[in-house]
Amino acid sequence: MRFYSYFSVLNFSNCYLIGPDGPGDAVLVDAGVFDERLLKLIEDNGLYVRWVLITHLHHGHIHGLPTLRKIYEAGIYAFDPERLEAPLLGVGEGKPLECGPFSFQVLETPGHSNDSVCFLLNEMLFTGDTLSAGSIGRTATGYERALLLSSIRKKLLSLKEDVLIFPGHGPPTRLEIERRFNPYLEQKL
Image (cartoon, rainbow, N blue to C red; front, side, top):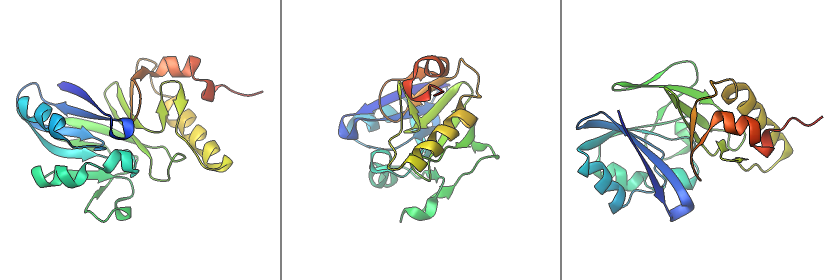
């Protein structure tokens, strides 16, 4: 397996490219941007984007979809596909998402948005805006914040400590680091 992280100044967002050891079909997690540099990364490595996994439908995670669709015939997967006018395929918790040789576990993590999901591939967790290094996703109300924290505690903090977190914004981190040092996850007495 080959793995590439791609950062875009547009929306300061990350996307992630996962492909086989040689040329072949690849997975792109979030498509906040699709520019010439990302296209070059894909093409120079002999990859073809066959699947796109969307952590949630905010602009910084889907802005590149129209351009991507002009170049690749990819299945695009999101939790709430009816919210976007483009044809998307639905995902949900409990059934693995098979993308060629890659099998992703889908974790529903509402709070930052109602359609937020995380994708777990082996020891790699793609969190979108749910959880990032030293932070959690923004919320508009106390209820949404409580929902987000509950999602993180029940779904993410129960995973193994050596899981690597690849967020939608900011640097990667490790789940154990977030358990121990993320100030938003401290239990209040």
